[in-house]
Length: 614
Image 1 (cartoon, rainbow, N blue to C red):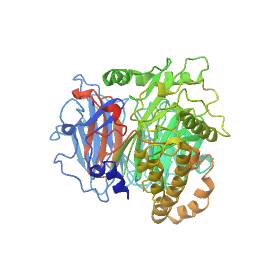
Image 2: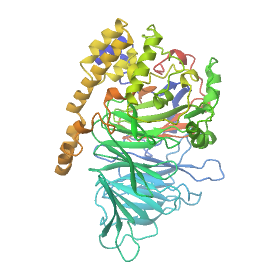
Image 3: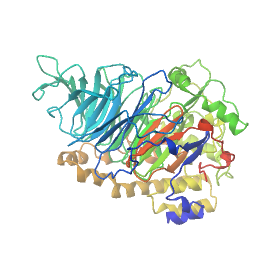
C-alpha cells in the first residue's frame, strides 16, 4: 500500500536509496565521502550484539589551526584521530591512539574541554561491565580506573559526562537506573560503599557515601525504574535532564538536588535528550518513534514531531542554524544566495550570544523577536530528520501575523479557514495554562523566512500535504486510504482535520499493540512489569499534562527526512562547518553545510518542498 503510494508520487525508486545530499532553506548539505572515519581497514563492523557506536569531539587549540580531535568506539575498539572535517581527507592509517579491550566493551565517552591542550586531554570512557576509565590518548596513558572491582555498580554504563565547569567532577549513569557523581582525585575504596539518604522525592532518591575518609562515589542518584538511558546538563550547567526506560523525562536542579519537572513519553522508554542553546526547551526521543519538545519554563509538552518509523536514538540542537531576528521580520524576496548570506553567518559568535538575545523575549519593553530553533534526530530506521521549531508552536496563543502559505495541493482552500483552525487548536493547547504570559507580541516567523522546505507546524495543519500524509501514515494503516481520497477531492481543511485525528488515534492503537510496550515487558524485570501496570500506567498519564493526547499538541513534520545509512544510526553532532552522523557499522560521516567546500547552491530549492535532491 505504502509502496504504491510512493510510486504514484515518483518516489518508488528512492525507497531504499541512501542519500548523499539533501536541501533545506539554507541550501545543500553534502556527504563528504573522503572525510569518512572508521576502523583503519574500512570494513563494515558486524554490529550484532555490540554496543552503539558513539563519537566525542574536543578542540585542543594547537598552533596549526587544526585542533579538532575525534574519538569513537567500534565493538571492543576505541580510536582517537585528528579530525580534519570539511578541510582534508581522513587519514585512517595514523590514529593518535588505538585501544582494544578484552572482556568488556566501551559504551560511551566524554572529553574535558576545560583542561584540553595540544599535549594532554582527559577522556572518560564508560564500559559495558560498569567500569569507567580516565585516559589521556595524547600521552597514551591510563591514569585511573573507577568502579574497577564493580563494587559500586555492576551494570552497563549508559552515559558519562564531565560536570560543566569542573576539571575533576564527572557523572556516570548505569542500566541499573543509578547515577553516580565521582571526583577524579578520590579513590573508590576496597569495599562496597555504604550510603546515607540525602534527599528523596517522587520516584527518585539521592544518597551520600558514608565513610570516614572522602571516597567515590560522592553521590548516588536513583532515578525512576529501569535503565537511565541518557542525561544532559543545561547550557548553564545548573540543571540536569534525565531520560529513562520507564518513559519519563525528569529535570533536576543539579546543585540543589531537587526535581524541577517531569514528562512522560507517548509510550515506551525514552532513549535520548538534549537542551536548546538558551536552555528554554528540551527535546527527548525514544521508543514511541516521536521527538517530544518540552518547555523548561512551563514544564509541559509544547509539540511532538513525527517522521521516524522506528526508535529515535539521538536528538541534538543545531546551535549554528538556530536564528534570532530582533528587528521587525523582513519579507524576503531575493535569490537563494542572498538568503544564504543572511542565514548562514550564524557562526560561533552568534551561537554564543543566543542565550542573551533569546532572553529578551521575556522583557515586555523589547522589540519583537523572531526565533527559529533547528534540531535534528536520527533513529534505528536509518533516517536523519531535521526539524524547525518556530514561534507559532512556541507561542500558540498569539495570532499569526499572516496566514502561512504552504506549497501543497491544499493551497486553494480559503486562508480564513486555515487561520481559524490554527487559532482553535492553540486555544485547546494552552487551556488551563499560564504559559508564556510574559511574552510580548511577536510577529510570526513566516514573514521572515521562505518556508518552501518547511512543512506545517500545527497539529491541525499537519496533514495538508500529500507528502505529509505518507509520513504520518507510516504504521497508521487503515486511515491512509480515506486520507488519499480526501486529498484527491481537495476537501476543506476542517474535513482533513477530523480525518487526521481519527487516523492518529488508529496509529496510537496500532503502535501500542505492535511495538514498544511488549518490548519493555519482555526484557525488563518483574519489578518493572509490576510498576508499568500500576504507577506509570499509560492510561492514567495519557491526557494529563505529563503526557497530552496526540490531538492536544501541535504535530511537527520534519523539514527533511532522509535514509542515510544501511545500519541503525547512533550519532548526530552539529559542528560549525558540518554535521556528523555515525551508524552501527562503524562509519562516521561528515556532511558539509551549505556554502562549505565550494558547493553549488541548488537552483530549484524553492520548488522542492520535501528537500529531495535528485
